[in-house]
Length: 115
Image (cartoon, rainbow, N blue to C red; front, side, top):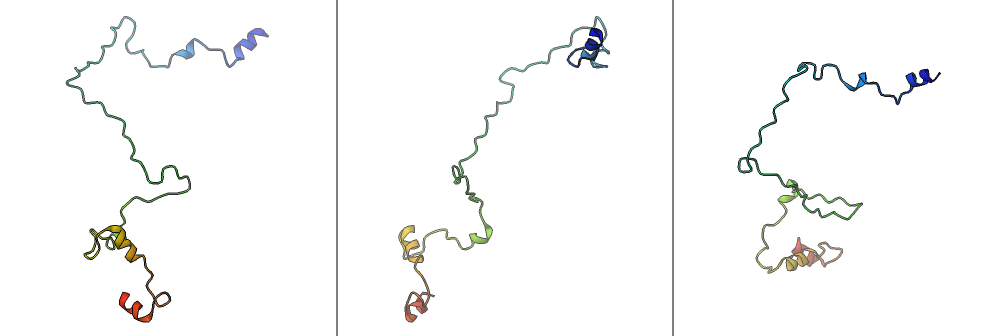
């Protein structure tokens, strides 16, 4: 019974299973050892690549928010390259633009001038 248990034991390792057929059989016994690959001097080697650091995203730290940072071609035609003439700063221009336009918030005469 002990021999049968030893024979059927899956943890037992056979000496025959250690070698894959074909590996090393072409060299045979007494073959010279393989040559080591040539190494180049540090001047001839390519420079080592540094690990790429991903740029910081605007939505880092916000688990439920995804901010699209790509340039949108459709909205690019509505964006200004520089501030228009009568305004001196971006904040001043944005404050003027933020006002409501329409008859609900302004007089009829004022709404006509703004639109």
